[in-house]
Image (tube, rainbow, N blue to C red):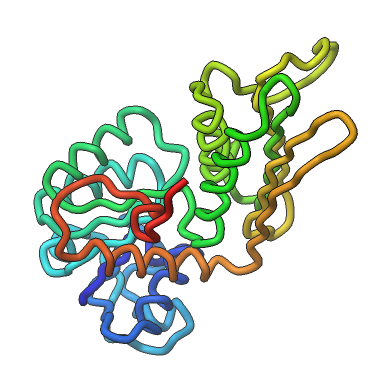
Length: 268
């Protein structure tokens, strides 16, 4: 199976290149970056620290989309929207791990899924997706009148969106368990004299600093007791391996928008 990696010159792009190179039956056949990027023209494997792969980073992704079985995209919202259009035209598998998408970018991804298999997830770690399922289940069991839900996340200093896509995914899972919409119950920040916490709210706390790959906790707090579900990532490679797994699963499937829970066969 042949792969292309967009954003191959970035931190996550390098992890994706390395994951493809390390997976039996997979071959990197293309890599791209935005025009003017310092890595354009360099070997993607050398940049990723896995040795020369004979694939130079290009600033024109279009030929790559037409030549590969799957594209891995962990870039930025505007770029992902553009890549979705290219994937729809080329009808190659598209794996999207970009977070912070606005409605317009998300609509482009959903349109692409009408023409080609798209796997989109806020987090490509298998254990995190188990955490999504557990969060929904626990939220359904523990009532809103008796148990408060708070979601705490921390990432490296360079992350630009907050709360993280994974934190929002956990919020949506908790809301689904309670049969409500997250937008109706979410509290993204607290400052000053906020008054008592209202029953049924799902709160978020965002921390940024250092090189933290990703830490997420869902706190179910009741009078006299507290249940915490947590995941800590120490290496971004786990997300890259999950993306490769998702692409291999989607290859040959009909067009559609799939999640990593589909890939893993997870049910609540």
